[in-house]
Image 1: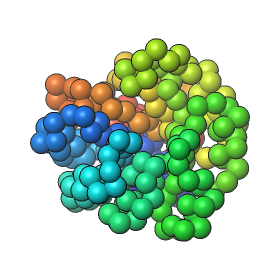
Image 2 (image 1 turned 120 degrees about the horizontal axis):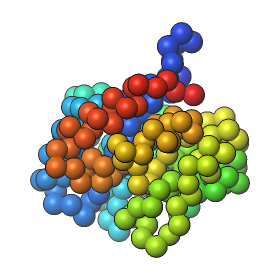
Image 3 (image 1 turned 90 degrees about the horizontal axis):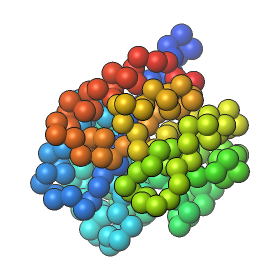
Length: 218
């Protein structure tokens, strides 16, 4: 499975690097990017496509798993608990359209659970139930959410301080601004274009990995 958040007391937690798959990219090029990223230090690969059928999402997740698992990289499927179970994923990432985490834990107790939140109140509510991490954002402006205002680093810091779960920052994160989210206390970052849109996805991943490893976790 991917990086654990709880480790020995003398060793600070490793900040985790999550790559979210952009399913609109050509499949062969996408898989090449994923292969380079997992070799360079991505901890989790997330398969997300709200428009895909269960079968299409399963087929994609299966190929991604084959590329990721030899490197010990965790696989998370967004929203679809059935697909996550069918493909043997490590975790499911829940959103506003998903089943609630209490129900997911009951029917799929072995799956890790991440939950996406966008406000302080939502983060507090999510942290009160049995989830493994919160994903908060979008922190910076991002092409994934055009026209929507960013939450900002200050909001991220408030969430980190208010909850007991690891907080993964998402949205517009790059090598130029990642230090800001780490200073706010994020336990890791989730990116799309910072890796998939780079001229050299492996080198981009390695740069992010170095920056994450330069600071200890919460």
